[in-house]
Image (cartoon, rainbow, N blue to C red; front, side, top):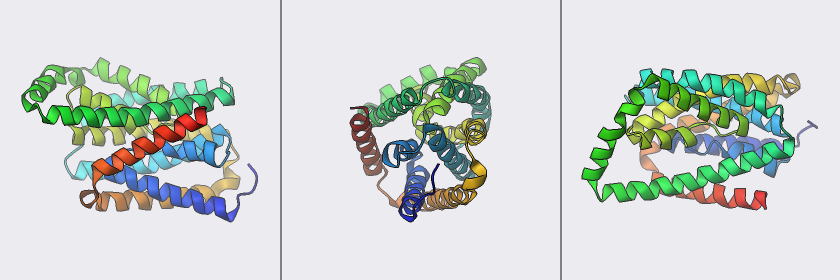
Length: 264
C-alpha cells in the first residue's frame, strides 16, 4: 500500500466515526466500510478487510457492552452462537485467500446489496406485524424453540461467520434479522448480533492483518480504533434522540444504490 494522502486519512477517519455512530444507534452500517475502502479508495481487498474488521472488533466490544448494561444481551445465546461464528470466521478467512481478488470484490458488493435490501424488507415486515400483534405473538412463541437449540445456534454461527469474514460484512446486518425471524425480540437480537461480531472479528482481524504490512500502518490502525470507537460511543449516547427508522432507510437505500453501481 502506497503512502496515504491527508485527504484519504480524513475520509477514513470521518467514515469510521460516521459508520460507528450508525452502529451505536441501530446496530447496522458496518458493511459500508469495506465498500468504501475497495470501491471508493481503491484499496486491495485484503487490506480493506483488515481495516474493516479492526473497526468491527471495536464496535462489537463497545456496542455489546452498552446493550449488556441496558439488559438487552442474552449472554448464553451469544456464546453458543459465537462458538459457531468463531469457527466460521476462521473458515471464511481461509476461503478468501483461495479466491481471485475480483471475485472477492463481487462477493462483497453482493453481500452489501443483500444487506441493504434485507433492511428494507425487514422494516416492511415490522410494519405488517405491528398491524397484527396477535399474529406476531404466535409467531414468536412457535419459533422461539430454535434459539434454545445449541446445534442450531452453532450451525447458524458457522454459516454467518463464514459469510461475514469472507465478504467483510460486520455481522449484525446478517445475524440480527435471522434472530428476529426465529422469535428473538429486536433489541435482544441487536445486542446478541453485536457481541457475536466480536467472535467473527477476532480471527478475521488476525487473519487479514497477518497478510499485510501492519507495522507500517500502525498510525492508521490507531486512528481507526479511536474514530470508530468515538463514533460508536456517541451513537449509543444519542440513540434515543435520533429517528432510527429514517437512518435505517437511508443506510439501506444508499448501500443498495452503491452496490448496484459497483456491480455494473
